[in-house]
Length: 134
Image 1 (cartoon, helix red, strand yellow):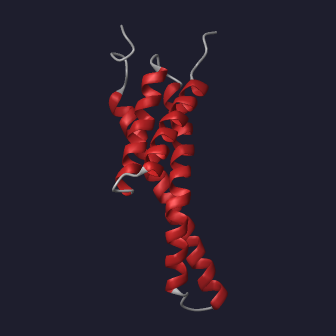
Image 2 (image 1 turned 180 degrees about the horizontal axis):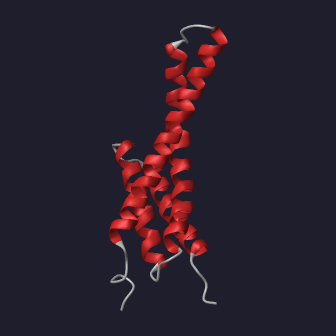
Image 3 (image 1 turned 90 degrees about the vertical axis):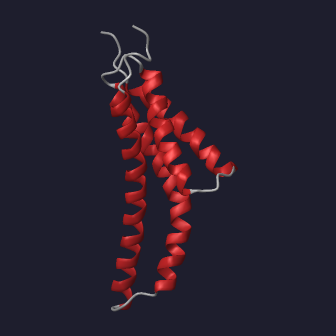
């Protein structure tokens, strides 16, 4: 059977969405930790302007990089039991990348580069995580 016929589309799509959601959640956790640390430092209500400035700087920078790292790792996990490593890695990266591109609407060159980076990282992860014939 060909590679496309053996692809587990739903699993790859869900894993791509998990990579996107995980990057989003980790970015939110970073902002929460910053706000919590700021509240402890001032022993009261933290400066909302400082928290918003931190969130505006962290979200667009950390989010895409975390998405790339998670897509690479999760694509390696998907590829452990796969016969169509390239297709499944590309699907994981494509779903994660397009989900991330939706947050950066309207699309720009930076978003397109991160989309390609996510797909490439997922392919690298899939090939790194595949089982080798013994």
